[in-house]
Image (cartoon, rainbow, N blue to C red; front, side, top):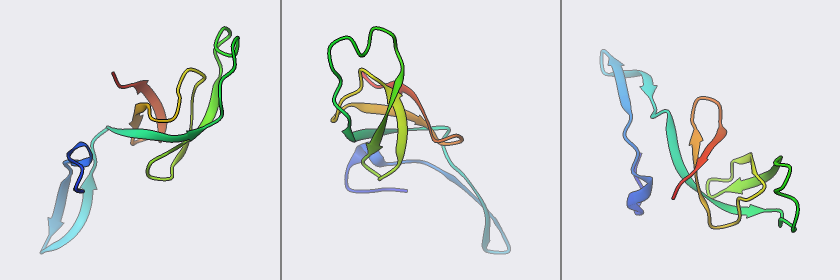
Amino acid sequence: LQSEDRRHRTSCIRESYKGSPINVNMPTHVELEVTETAPTFRGDTAQGGNKPATLETGLRINVPMFITPGTVVRVDTRTGAYNERVS
């Protein structure tokens, strides 16, 4: 899977049988940018918690309160869940 943006070049392994694809193995994590999330107010992050966020692909996930639009996050492709913020 590739796009013009080098950050989105993702390697995957395609298994075939007699020329027909039978399985595609994706990486366990991908890095995606947060495009939309609710604002965080002072004190919101003190007790932790999560809030919904929309990623550049349109996927909606729950992220920690400190994540803001423009932040790049690592997402587990097996579960579709937030894993960590990418520095």
